[in-house]
Amino acid sequence: MSDRCQVCGGQEAMPMVHQEPHLWVRCPDCNFAWLSPMPDSHAQPAGERDGTAASCIARHVDKIDSRMRRSRRRVRRLARRMPGNRLLDIGSNIGCLVAAALERGLEATGVECSPVLVAEAQKRYPRGRFIAGALEEVDLPAASFDGVHCSEVIEQVADSNRFLAAVARVMVPGAILYLTTPALREVTRGNDPARWRHFGAPDHKLYFSPANIRTQLHKHGFAEVRVLFNFGRGIKLFATRAG
Ligand SMILES: [Zn+2]
Image 1 (tube, rainbow, N blue to C red):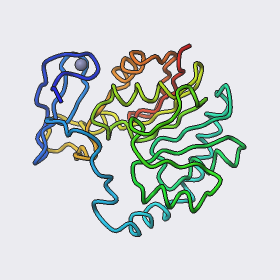
Image 2 (image 1 turned 120 degrees about the vertical axis):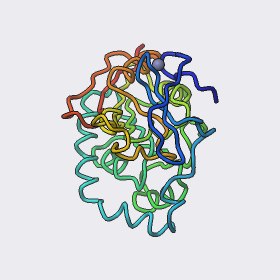
Image 3 (image 1 turned 45 degrees about the vertical axis):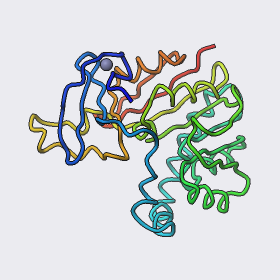
Image 4 (image 1 turned 30 degrees about the horizontal axis):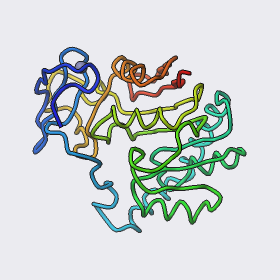
């Protein structure tokens, strides 16, 4: 993959920090940051690389109460804005968001790269529909969702243009996207790159700012991008699929 900026197409990639063995670069024009060289596609999900399926699931189940509370809150906010009742969760993990959507009477689908997590989610929430694979590769019909939840996923894809095109494709005009992702400013606090927080490579491959993610979403057919105030922490936003 080329080292052009995915957001503005700029051709200059300025070295930002070495976190051995990884080099992070950024675009001097729009401040988008990425891992260089960029891996070709989705790396294997971290949980499955680092341990057994059981330990991976156990880590998620541990936090299930707080995850369910957060999922219900997010579904409530999404459902208020959605033009219909079909919700897609990208990166559905063990299925909390899908479960919260089902509780609310929505039709809910989860897409998740890890087959282990998909199997666990389907077992826990049999009324949900869970699909294993990357969104860009699974076969979902176009314009088939009224809402999409995508939390802490986009920073893990190699090509945010291909990913956002796939997100936009499955949404009906007027559908609502709720997206969260870490912000570059969170991991680059202070003047000394040696003291910056670990960027999370190779699972994490990209970092946006509130300004350049807005540009990126507009490019892919989203309007009314509303970035929520979040005390200088990660990016949280709502965006509407334009008609
Ligand atoms: Zn750029």
